[in-house]
Length: 283
Image (cartoon, rainbow, N blue to C red; front, side, top):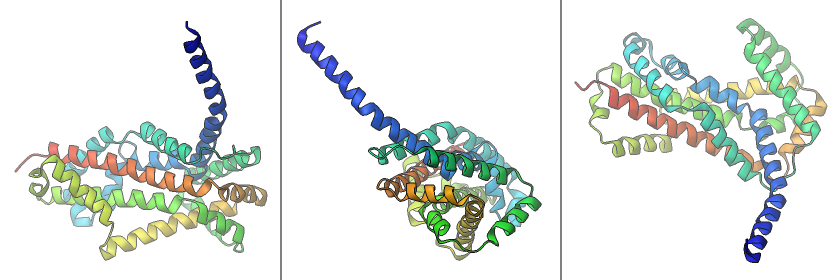
């Protein structure tokens, strides 16, 4: 080994050692934020096998539900091939870590608070409907707390819920047209045109009054449930979490989380639509 190559190797080693703590802190921050926002549980609930077709059915009108079984089954198959939960969650975490690079590692108090909040969320999700109503009413009856209100404002839960609802609405619309025998408007399009059409729909957003109202309700319900969960959290945990979500990297991390979550859902959904349409029998 030459002197120059030895020097270069040692420089690379030193540089990696210097950067390792920063990268580790960024990953720790990202992992804590993903747990706090419930990203993996949310993505799993919305895009696991069977979940996409189930949610699409719920958004169909009763007449369309009665004729959509074949289209919903095809959507379920296409979605199971298109949504990769592990890969998407990893990609989101990577983007969050990049946005939080240079930030301080979460303190033990923050990590403990995040863990308690994640357990609260998991316990709530495991409750039956009656227990959920009882919990919600009890916690929401507590006096308004400006600290908890501010912490909720720093969270991304309503925005990620909007992404999920938008995806469900788009997929249910495609299912509706297939079920009604209007597949030609999709099957005749080249892949590039079909992808552009899906991209345009995402960019335009939800404009029709009824779906828009449903979206507003979905966002508000997500916030209300999260507020109830925060109300059940000890004051010291809430204070630690708010301080953490008010640090210099927090806003960029939140933006990265929402943006990458949307990109993963949008991209996988576009693949599901293409797979569904291309596999649908031409009339």
